[in-house]
Length: 347
Image (cartoon, rainbow, N blue to C red; front, side, top):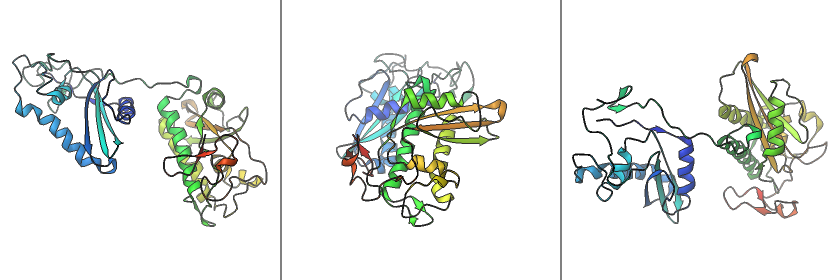
């Protein structure tokens, strides 16, 4: 019997997440198992295991014909799980009107009356290794990362991660949960913009500034720029580099000793350990664009993110007050986000 082991695919997981959130039956091109069940996503783990076991146990009450053909009426879910042509899969779930929609996607859809796997000795026909009674495919057909922002040289997954991390930390600041040694917590922000990712100018320019692996990184063409250098580390992934760099910029507030109850920008913040934090926290920023560069010959990795607004002395880093209470005074983002923490201003 020749059945392939399957690998988890992050891009397929993203596809599953996006489709699970639609709360309708999956209509894409991948193989799919889907089930709606009562329960909240925060408590979904045990129920998900139960559903997966139910799918797998379908074979106990069915008998495969001698040619192991897929019978969609008898083993609708088991057949898709066992289909030997798939080398990747992923699952995700989403809240849907008091229920949870679980969606698992597979590389190849099992077709009714198609052979699920070749009968015979376990692993007898494996082209390569056999581990835990499963053939290890010589080629795993992972889905290539999409790169909509080609000039910025980051995949869609990484651009999304970069902007989401920025907005997460901006939301923490705006909500009043950013730790500040001078005041215990930094004051809340009343009109903090939610950032959008900008490819054609800021991400592109950030990538160009990193191209030659110069450090310090050359200044941005316009706007402002945060940078981070990973010394003696040219093997870190760009995803990990972005995550750690953005976290380090946010962490400057606590590490530097804090700002206190008055978030007003002072020129000396650029030299006293707050230079990156103030750009990340600047309420006036509306976009961000990032890049990462592996500089093996020099033994380090660089990260840069650019923003569209520049602070000058005595500008407010942000306006204090109840989150979103002054969004209406913004030039563009005049409304409050509807999702939690409901602290950032959106269009």
